[in-house]
Amino acid sequence: MKIDCILKLFIKAKMWQAVMKKLLILSVFLFGILTYCSGEKSPAGSTEDFFTELEDSSGARASIINDSIYRSRQNAITRAVSRVSPAVVGINVTQIRRFREPSLFENDPFWYWYYRPREYMQKVKGLGSGFIISPNGYILTNEHVVERAEEIVVTMTDGKHYQATRVGEDHENDIALLKIDVSDLPFIPLGDSDDVIIGEWAIALGNPFGLFDVNSKPTVTVGVISSVGMNFGGGSAQRSYQNMIQTDAAINSGNSGGPLVNSEGKCIGINAFIISGSERQGTSIGLGFAIPINRVKQLLPDLKNQLARAREGFETGLEVENINWLVASMLGISPGDGVIVSGVESRSPAARAGIQVGDVIVSMDGIRVRSSADVLEIIDKKDPSQSSSLILAVFRNGKLYKVTLKI
Image (cartoon, rainbow, N blue to C red; front, side, top):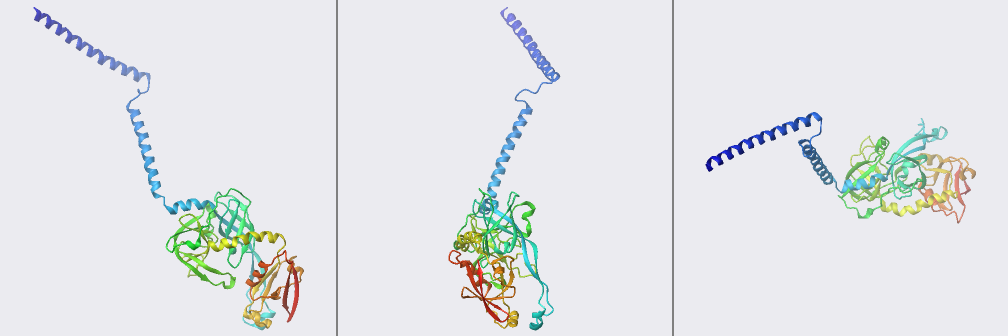
């Protein structure tokens, strides 16, 4: 009897279990239909959210990997370039240059005197490089970049243009100091050129072939210090390139005046000239030379004072050239007996003193003059606070005259 009761209860429990299972399946099915028809979004934790989270985590991991790769590509050179590039500038100038038409009697001393070639002045465009050395706008470049320039325009890496003033120039050492009226500028610290090591990295920056005008960014070339203590004569330009730094970092036309920096981002020289060994004189073959920055640092105080002296009227208005053997033979003198006046600026002290083109300056303040470099040195050492005039010995038409030039 008891067994029958137990069996009946067991059968009833199984029946209810089957019914509950069917009801559960039906309720889940109905819930799915209602959710689809109502257009509700998938509940949190659905497959869509899973893939979204997966994409986000993958992007984060990719960003971390890219940052790691970027950091691994950084080195001393890239860090140095990043530091100094904002302080490199392009320089565009309008210069006055002297041109001479060829003469049929170039090699005939007699007829050359009567049929001298016509000379004329003409405006030409020029370009070069420079770099900022102080937050208040002082810029270093080569003197030959801005020589006889009527207008100097400096282009910054942000594309802005500024009119620059010539503060000081050193023709013999080929150094010029410019100034723009801007403050809080990035600048390149000056290093120690006596401490350079042959074989260490050298980075040349500048404006080759005017590429600075394309995107206002300096071009970077990398090499090593090839040699130091290289000495070159002045040549016809009467420049003295002594103790030069040689590098195989490519220096091309337009790089003149730009900085040569080391891997610490410090300037060790000013790019000055190259030896190309071919007719394409502006193309680098790996023989570039830079003026050592220690010499520049020695000259900087004098360069900064030149502007003040010029504003006090310390100008002569004279243009002189060395005397070649042909002119010397026509004048009956030796080539080293003086310098010939090739130009006199109108309304200048030289013009007021009556100095003429073709005059030969033999001495200044009793000091013998044998080259144009001597003239520059005498004028440069003249102290306007001590004397406001120069006493010139001038040879003209076979006679020697004494001329007082008020400065």
